[in-house]
Length: 462
Image 1 (cartoon, helix red, strand yellow):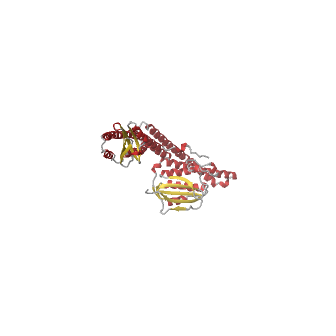
Image 2 (spheres, rainbow, N blue to C red):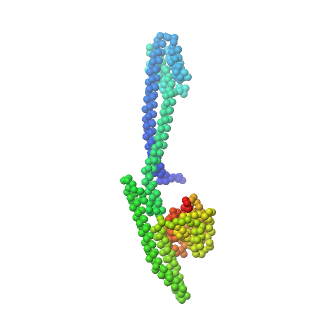
């Protein structure tokens, strides 16, 4: 079976695509310029070299023809002088006799087609390689002397120039590609800077900081987006504050009749023996619901207060070991927790009441919903003070690990304890109080089974 990856999973990030596009455009443009430069420059230099060689060969051929016409005895010395240049050679065919002179080259290796063409009285030239040396062979007929003259000119220097030019142009294309990619990276970073700012602001707003605002801009393309984002967060902030005040007002209004009902319930419980069995059962049910109602009202009031004055927390140095010990003493039932504390004890700047309430809620959550508290860890980790609360329960499903910290969330029905009568505000209070201390909280699997609830708050002095 052949496996293929969907194309959607192979897409590069936008920044990388911009860099790649700039780099490819730079390579294409500079590559086209390099090809044109190579063709024009190489053609021009080769043409100049060939014209120069032909002119030199014509002059030398006239000298040789004059020497043949005079039947000069200096012909051998003349040919030797003409072929004395490094990697050059001359060939004279006089009445079928070959007279050659050269330096490191054998002119008899010349192509027969070239010699035959010159022998027919036609001037010719040809670029070829003799003894691994690039040369230009120029053949000229000498009709006055019934002879043929061929001179070989070396092209090694021109060939080296071509190689150097080609390497320089190729290096220029590569450097241009890298420069284009760097330019694309700079352009992408500059173009995406507003998007990066917007992403950071949106992340802060999603984390609960509704006071975040985008700075004003004069860019006509970004101004509508900035205005829309700021208006949205401002409306959300007003909505959250209004809901918190509503919850607080309702809680305050309900506390008076609730207190009256609790006092009346206390009177009835003192005279419980005078009631019938059904009356006693009804009284117990009513007492349970009233206590649950009281916890709900207290939690709603706590949430509303935490929402309104989150930025004005009365901070003080707090020893986490002492705080956890005090919170554990307020537990109802259960064995004293096993405390695993670092030495020296972690210390934080915190609102003692709110942080202790958060720890108390985690301890109560372990007792009521986690089948018992197993361990409390007080550690330090990368400048953060960490509180770990381990329970012996079945753990929290991955899909519910963020949901359980929301208000009135009680987890998936499949994993919920049927006897659970909580309103789902305890862990929401934990998250809200910890966030107010510039910390974070989450739940993970405990080694050996169960759940581990973690609170991290910056250490004092960090």
